[in-house]
Image 1 (cartoon, rainbow, N blue to C red):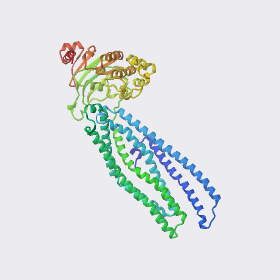
Image 2: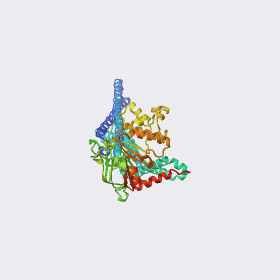
Image 3: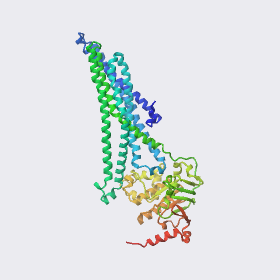
Image 4: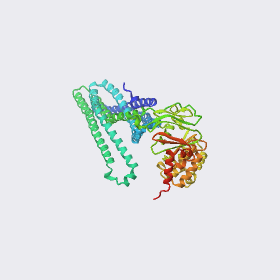
Length: 583
């Protein structure tokens, strides 16, 4: 038996709702036979004068009353149908989107190295929309039509099996045409999806790089990648519609041939005296009534085949193992230890891709530790391993003696605050962007965090103050203002471990001074890991770890490292000499 629950990736509730939707649609289809039965009886009564009989107006009024009751029954059945079919399918699609989003949130960062943003967006939006449409417009109606047609066929066969056969003989023949095209449509669907994803990637790349494109004169025909992707998407869409339309139209022609066949058989039987006029008219009305919904379903059936491609992608996403651990382990100490750690973003493919190489180092608690070294030496990677954005390939990272691999990522995050060079702000109010640091914070706590991060001044000058919408990624703010909001978040979270990744880089002196004040308040009494290229900003750190090509080069205080005359001293001297450079 075909497993609809697994095929459609439904929850238990979603599967139960689907069965209720099929039952509701079946009841609606069968309820529509009541007005049909009344109509037949009205025709029979109106045709009595042709057979030298009188019309019974008492019966006509009775049939009129039955018609009103039938209309009420159809209305109630349709209302129940809408509730059981459309409302529940929208709720299931909502749950699917949330489920996919939650799954993505728990995936390791290594997963995103191999996936495009457009593909993940398609998973959440387009694929879930396809599921929504299949649940609301295709499966319940298709299943209900199959059930109701079977019931009606049996009932009609009781009147005249020859007429019943002429009505329904074309249905399986037409369905066979659609099913035979299943593999062809599936193959074209995959190609069309690939073309859509490629076009989405190119559109995203075009929009993200619009400044470079304009600056380098790559607009128009010179930016051919986008044009080629859009042309391919159009070509595949036309090809898909043509092939699908050919099979669907063929199936519809075969199905509608049943109308002519029914008329031919009915006329033949009537002229031979083997069927009466009223039953024949009944079959004529039924054939028109039944074929209408089936023709519509035939046009929607290819979308059911396309949905299998969508669920295949969603199933691939949902099967990716998440980062897990035991979230109940409390951290009581904040010292961080790297023990023989080796890591590479693509280390599964080649050990030559290692970024961190057999690193053993300790970061003391309640102190400021700076990570320095040439570009590409692994400074930012170390902070990401501490936060468990990635898991190490070899060795272990421990916080307070507990391996971070054994901790639930969300539980681990509750002990850490981050201030990155590239700040991410959401298209929401200033207040809500700060409150992300602690969703349980009161308005007073949010205001205090903003003041401590030197944000209150520029926020008060905004049109609506803290209720001002920031635009996409805080586009209405300067780099320094965005950075200070990021620090306000971290202050509000008040986590015992703080990671600062180039927090004051690329800022003007005024903003740098304000941010340094905010950071000073943030790091009081915390375990702080600072990543900085400007060595003068971390000369007062309790410990400085110097990295070179993923290995520990040296460690100590600023004075100790300067006296060692090693890599740190050379980098510091080069930076001091560059301070005197001018245009």
